Length: 276
Image 1: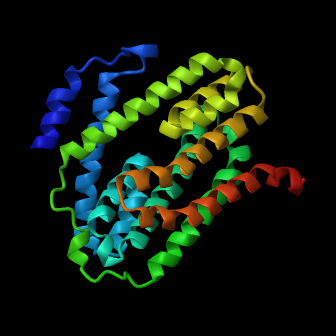
Image 2: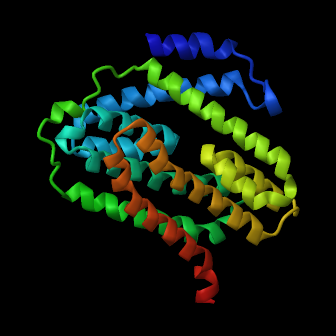
Image 3: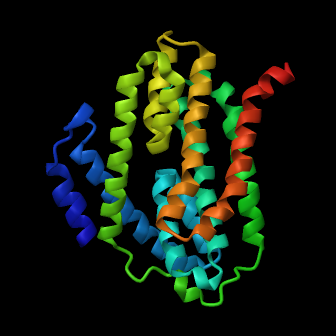
């Protein structure tokens, strides 16, 4: 009922336009993220209940990553804060990595809709990054859960508005910083903009670069590298966010898998050149 109230009742009446510095504060978009967090929290709760504490966490990561890998990683990090004594952080880290792994195919789908001709160039870096991330997730899936108290993984309250509001505040700060750098750097700093935008949102910069390449404004190489940089930035920020919200041990367990995914993406950028 609370979820319906903040989504069906409150969300439609919020203004869908920018306010404040650089018009970066959009009440509709920010509150939509709050609704998304609440929905994913409930989805994760049901998934873990149905599938069990081991597979449920990873399935939550895989499904949540299709909507927002950042939101999913933070939601799992919140669980690690209260269940660190059960040795759950490694498993929760695998769930966060699974969320990142599904972010790469989502980018490919967006590109396929906007500029299909760019997909072959992006398939290598994003495809290899997906394989590298899922390989570590698959290894963790086959390992014992290492959970002495499985009930500790169950969120006591599947709807935690306070956590959602804290994330909304964090997202607002990142959006302000991104828009400020965009205004100061300008079009000449397209790569820098890709990195900065990727810290908060990958979809926006992917759509922008894809449209610019489709209109002939930038070279295919620029568009490809810009999108890969945005995905890498979004990947790199995950351990820091997890450490800030959850258990530092969980963040440490994400460093190697996400580092492997990032290295695979870099390798994939040059793979077409080497193969030809």
